[in-house]
Image (cartoon, rainbow, N blue to C red; front, side, top):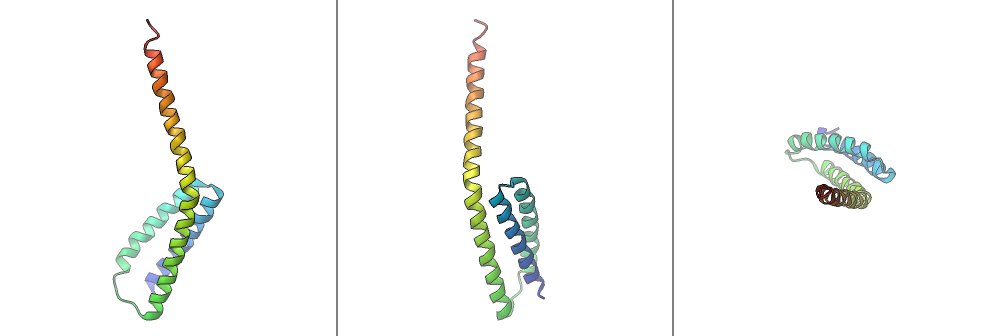
Length: 108
């Protein structure tokens, strides 16, 4: 099998695992898999420079579509969680500012 296709196959497997981790809310696993995904992409950028035959190109396009579909599914799961996390952090910062504001005048 073509080395580029092997990398795409491997990346497709990783993104499927990432999709499952996101669906289960396993953000730690998702983060670990994201690191693996980034490493694969870096390797692929070096390998994926040569022209390929039609069958390889068709398989590559199919894998890219699957990877992009998995990415969209991951984002649909992660974006609400990220928004919630951002709200929590914003509330914590606001509470911290209020605490500091009221505690700084406590000595008067």
